[in-house]
Image (cartoon, rainbow, N blue to C red; front, side, top):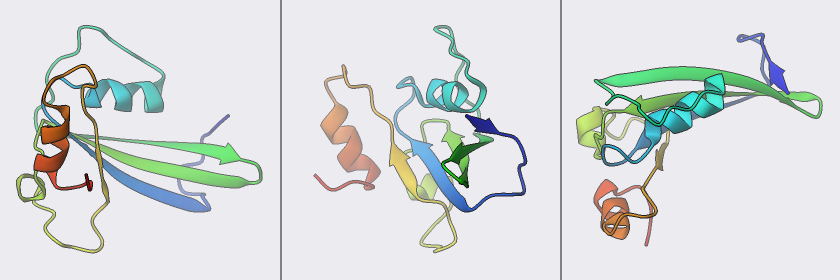
Length: 111
């Protein structure tokens, strides 16, 4: 169930979606935040940002999600080792042959 008050929340999750171009980061963001999906999506230029708040039992959970343009390194995102920076989540094309190497290249997940 969606919850609309953007400044009233109990928990905040910050996530940056990273991964190679064309793996579905933008559609993941669009589907989760706007309930939209397009088979003919355009490449992201720069970074897109969206939020969604949902009610879980008696708590409001807010997600702040950044969609990158296939910039898989934190150097490319310019977030460095800043502890205030949002965590990164890897989005990969599960049908692609280079999935494991893409995850390793991003440096966000252990193999």
